[in-house]
Structure formats: structure tokens, C-alpha cells
Image (cartoon, rainbow, N blue to C red; front, side, top):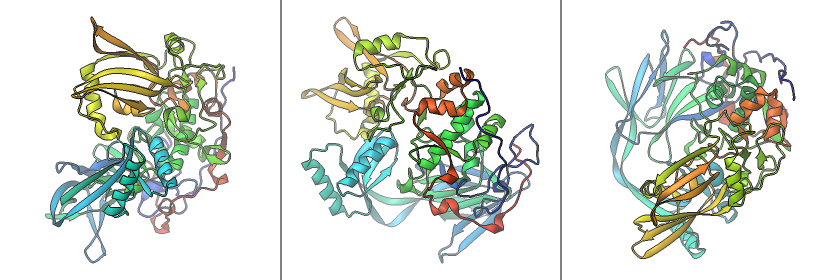
Length: 561
């Protein structure tokens, strides 16, 4: 059994140099510890190619309701600076300790018609990206959107006539999920706030604080905040924050503040890798990452933890690579005892380092083939011997749902499935048609009763959880529930929570407690990968992530919550 040793040497942090425009004092330095640390010790917030600025959507779809509000406030003794464009193109600035921004719907001078050709709908970005790539190979320009679930749109640069031609092509090729949505807009949502007794209306507002951090509703965030329009007629509240500071708001919330240190260090490396690999996710909306489980959970400076900070510091600049490129650093809470291959959960090409593996500390190469129902049943009956056993409450799970409950979930998800369905009265049956080697459902047949008779459809991979979100994973089997001969519902018996690809966060707990260091944990879950310094890679970072302004260099002794 390997004995734990610090996986990485203590590193000296770079001295403050040039900073991104407007990030203010906190971007020069943040205290390493919110409590108990040396108040003179500072955090690495200098913006460099190894510590670029990320643009994170912390509130998505703000303004869908005209009752939406967001409060921004500077720390005590500081002021906010509000920046917005004037009609002549100049920038107006206002100074205030706090501001509440709401929404006003203002009538358009003339109605506008919005055309969206939705090419496919998905539970995950990964499958959406594979679909977009497939359409691009056919010569159709695409955009990936997330109005609620992920969708692939034909480029909005196409004319309505061109969109109709693409739809006709899809119909001729019998691609069923393609649909054209036409929306007439008579009003536009605008940001609204009051300053010195005068009400302002704008479509973009940037807010910074003298202190370098500010409060957004009930959480604090380093850097700047921008309220900006998105592709859906509403707004996104975007936090611009350096990578290493961003990780402070991710690691303790993803892996938990009580995680063993080696598990925290592994999570820090993965979170850093994941962020840099996924800067293109929200290109359609002019930001990069979200703050929830569709990306990584991010809570700003609220809930930072000294042990997580130390894990981030010790792994500073380290990322996980395969053949010299950043890996798809996906991870989940619990894999149920066996990790899934990338292609078992999402569409797209297999990743050599994301393969089905037994989640057993010293036996990852133990072979399981769970494609047959009987083999899966025997596997799910095993309660011990796995890294997650006794650690994750969702290592094994079981629940029952009535046909009425299942029917309600399917109806709620119908808009986002992208599968044309007839009117139906009830679900008639569920039947697993295909499983992967790791036991994940690859195809689920859903029988429906319609006025014209029985109808069946097939859900594939992550569509299953999109249709039935009560499911914790796609590693499950079903048993019918009956009253006499009448079907009343189904019992679901399964394991794991989340997609199950890559690292298991609860599995990493056990490995760390058994003496694995961070590098060994990552090698366990991502075989064939290599740890690398960011400076050794050639990354194409967006210009906005590397903007500098020497005039903004300041320092701060510490951040006190």
C-alpha cells in the first residue's frame, strides 16, 4: 500500500506584477486563510498565461421575470463603481456603496421576429458538442446554447430562408429532432436601477469595488461583475476572476471541506484542467463557464477553506494532460463501483483515458462485463469491497415511481428532448434494450398509449436522465410494479450519482485514506495521463483572459468574511 507523502513541493508564488483592468485590490493579493492565517500572506492573483481571467456566469437567465432583482454591495468602507455606455458611445461612471438592479420590460418601436432552428437537445454539453461537430461536418454552422437544457442551434447568422432549407434537408434525411421556433418580440428586457434619485435603463452594466471584491446577493466575489445580455432575451450576471482565485470557490464545494488532503489536491488539479478545457462552453452568450453542476460548482469567496486553499497552492499551475493536451477532466460524485467510458454516457469519440474501470483500490483492472441483466443484478447486489462503499449514500440506491409520476416527468422534459411525440394518455412500459460494458443504459424503450394505439420511442444515453431526472445515474435496472395484472409503476435499482465518468469524488476519499497521493489518485482514474505545468503547454487563451492594466496594481492584506 502506498504511504502518503506531499505530492508536490511547496512553491513560492509569483510576485505581484501586472493585473487585469478593473479587478482592483484583491487581484493583487488575497489572504490565504480566511481565519488563522498570516494576514500579510497573499494569494497569487497576478494575471498571467498560467493564471488567466475566467468569465463565469454566476446568475444565468436573470430577467426572465420582471420581478428579478440582484443586489450588489461594496465591503464596509469601500465604494462600487458602475460603468455603462452613453448614447454617444462614451462611458458613464457612478459611485455608490450599493445598488439594486432590476428588470423593466420596454416596448420595442416595432416588433421583431426571432427564428431559431434547433438541431438537437441534450442533457449535457458533451453530447451537444458531438452533435454540433456532426452538423459542422455537413457544412452547417452551429451554436451551442443552454436556454434550459443544452441545445444545438443552426447559426443565427442564417436567414429565415436558409434555416427553412436546413430544416427541409433534415426532414428529407429523416432527422426527427430538428424543429424551427419562431417568436415575435414586442418588448425588450432592460436593466434598471436608481442612482441619486434618477432611474437608469441600460442593456449592459459593469460593476467593480475599490476593495477588489464585492457582494452579489448573499455571496462575495473577487474581481468584477458584469450584467450582460444573452441569447435568450434575458441577462447573465458574469464574474471576471483569475483562475487560481476561482478555484478557491470551487474546490471546497465540489469535494467537500472535510475531504482528505490528497483528494482535495486531486480535485484542485482537475478543476483547473476542466476550467481551461471548457472556456468555449458559453461562447454564444459571451462568457465561458457556469457556476453549477453543468460546469463546476462555484460560490466565489463564500465558503473558502484553508485546507482547500493549501491544496490549490501546492498544485499551482498543474494540469492533467494526455499526449500533451488537456484532458476532458470530467468527474462525478459516485460511480457505483465501476467508472463509465466517455462514449457510454455521451456521444462523441472514446477517450483512451476514460474507460470502464472497477473502482476498487488495488484492483482497477478487475474485469466486469455488465451488459447482461443477470450480471448487472449480481453486481448491484454487492455492497462491499468498493472504494465508495460505506462512504457515499448513493453508492447503491433503490426507489419506486408510479406511472403517473413517470408520466409527469416525461411531459415536463418533452420540450427539451428534441423527440417529436404524439399526444399520449399514459406510459405503457419501460424496457432496457441495450447496456454498455459498465452496465450503463444505452437505449431505453418507452411505450406510450395514444388515442391511435400503442407508440414507442427510444431514449439513448443521457437522454434517459433528461426524460426522467429522478434517476441518479444511468447505472440501473427496472422491475415492474403491478396490482394483479395491471402495471402501476416501476422500481429502479441502481448505483452511483452523476455520469460516473472519470474520478469518483467519494472514491477519491477512500484512496486518499489508504495512502494514495494526488498524483496516484489521478493515475487511478485517468490511466495513461500525465501531470504537466501549464507553462509547458501551448494553450490558445481568449484575449479577454489575458488583458493587462498596470495602473490597477494594488494590494490587500486580507479578506475577512
